[in-house]
Amino acid sequence: MPTAAESLLYTTVQTLQAQGVHSVLCTFTDLPGVPKGKLVPLSGLGAAVAKGAGFSGPSIWGTGLPRLGPRSEYMGRLLPETVRPLPYWPGVAHGVCEGWAGGQPLDTCPRQLLQRQTDRLAQRGWRLWVGVEPEFFVFARDAQGRLVPADAQDKLAKPSYDLKALMRQRAFLDDLCQRLGALGFALEQTDHEDACGQFEINYAHDHALAAADRYQLFKLTAHATAEAHGLVFSCMPKPFADQPGSGLHFHLSLTNAQGEPVMADPAGALGLSATGHAVVAGLLAHADALSALCAPTVNSYKRLAVSQSASGTTWSPVWKAVGSNNRSALVRAVDGRIEWRLPDPSCNIYVALAGVIAAALDGVDRGLAPVPATEVDLYQAHARGEPTPERLPRDLCAALDALAADTRLTEALGAAYVAEHLAYGRAEWDAWAQQVSDWEWARYGDRF
Image 1 (cartoon, rainbow, N blue to C red):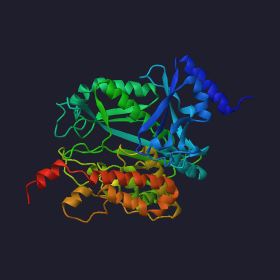
Image 2 (cartoon, rainbow, N blue to C red):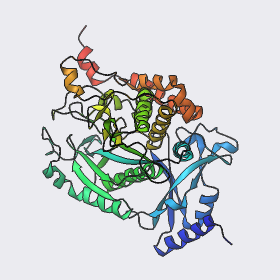
Image 3 (cartoon, one colour):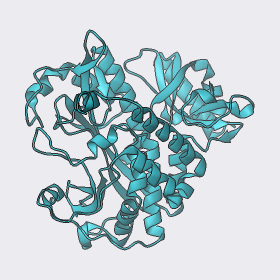
Image 4 (cartoon, rainbow, N blue to C red):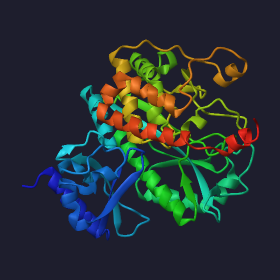
């Protein structure tokens, strides 16, 4: 009698064969959040599920694996329930892997980092639902290979919801949406965002692991589609100094075993229950350290700045505050859920969500007091010289220092992963610090 897993694998192979699939693209996510992987013939699917597709561990950012011995091999164990044909790669299906080494789950694997945190929720009978808002830029390359705006006409001072620019990019956007639909995305809306060349595509929410898997597939598909149109899909948080950057906002809600909301209470302040307020308090208490996970690049902090925008509006969540439908606060409470506005699309979504859960549970376990709501536009208050809540770290170095000092978050996520994240982030900061920019030449070249 075959096991349930064996039956699923057999059915998966038979279905893929009937669809003309000959290979599976087995993918994992490295520490910087980039999908990586290899093609495995359909005949090797069983081995990829049982033992894993093999990779050189030290060749992957953030594994911490050695160059020799049984733990030098990174084994990406394929999850058969994630396998689906790729509409833009005939004969090839896509599947998600988890990292193993030496026959054990890899404690630095980003997906398993999130799995461990969702397991902590499940122990309480809770499930986290996540709606992701992917914002991105579309570029082209000039004759020298440099990234330049793909649409020279997309230059309105206030370009939000610009239909002309939307229509000029309709070939790419229509193709992308059709491919996403074929992959099972429940699409909701597509619009031009508040920076030139910036767009957003929204799709239905899902539980945390599925939402993270789906976002990685979204990026993989967007990159492939843009390249097919001679374009570049960009998750750079802040390409232009005078325009808004891209966020990756998380809409978060919790349900119990009966499917009932845990954080919502229509009669409570901000529409949140006591648990909801403790979750918010946990997020804000750990916000500095979470910045290193949710905004992990040097460029991220160009977005997280009190800066002027050509459109007259900025959406950057600079201040550690919560408010009712307040888009100038780090946490926006709306309709019994919360919007965590810190992440940007350069983050590793598995890691960012794992950190969010760990911080939220710390707030619940310690019974942190509700944070008073901020019901003013914090940018206007700042411009008037009025007191504002504490700010997030101003650069990656400060965020990494905050993560290193946050012992509660390190314990929850695991010292092994945090050490890898800090090492990678500090190398990134050192590389940036050693560069001499055009701004420095212009400002200091002949000044002294």
